[in-house]
Image (tube, rainbow, N blue to C red; front, side, top):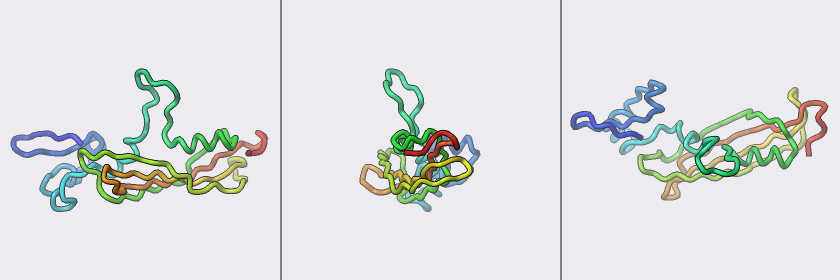
Length: 157
């Protein structure tokens, strides 16, 4: 969150709410934020974005990918292609300016081999849990992916 001082009033805004022209007073008006959420909060929809690594950073070695479990599954199961078929985000405690957020990825399930119009492969469900510095749950993203081989590329592991 970016705090902008305008006279004696502090407006809290972020690039995301400005870029999307989100005029929700919760993100712009301290009085509304105090009444609705007991103070300023970060836009909930940004939770996932904060954990997406940049493809490049100075001095970085190795590949950094978002949703690492997904890519590890593709490799381990010999499934070169994959799509996400569903994504749900559930919000819990609000994220506030100054919070330190951690995440963990949990593989919930892997299906038996299935054949779809895309090819033969497996569905999997991965949850990403986000917690603040107090251990409070702030959100859960649940992804369903389908890793597959196109017809004629052999069978999945």
